[in-house]
Length: 215
Ligand code: G3P
Image (cartoon, rainbow, N blue to C red; front, side, top):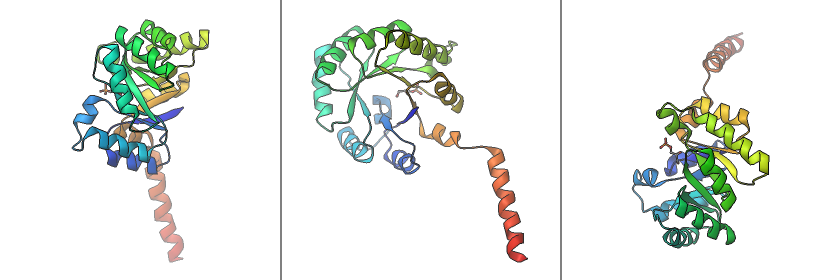
């Protein structure tokens, strides 16, 4: 499973890249709003740090406006992937951009029917928001299973990108289900490596090594 980092923070991206686990980056307007630099400069720097897909989101809600914004964002770097909201106008924009060989990421997907249509339109990625479904007492990971099954039934090439990841269990379940990608906040990437028995074991080894040196 590919791992993308879900942030626009350059320090977090640098740290995660140095850990050797990052295949791409996803941003959104809310993540951009947390940063101080102009968004074009942030995107340019992210694309310098990460060669894989870097998602940047349009804010237009009509297809023509989305495509116009997409072309502008894509001029920043070839690995910019255009995040398009999963709405009817978004389908039209995805179709146009896919015909221009520009990668797209259908964002804010909350149902299998939406996922079916964005795949038909030619989306490169679909982003089902699992955490936000959990927030309203629906099991977000159930949606991932349904989309994987639908795409498998018909051989769609659209990659299932598990988004709105809130905890390590989301990541483990995504990997068990065979999702193509999980986009993960920095805090959760950190949590994935933590285990109390590793810490206790390491502590003991280091203490015992002190005894070896004394002998
Ligand atoms: O990047 C989109 C998505 O991952 C947002 O997550 O936590 O705001 O629902 P969240």
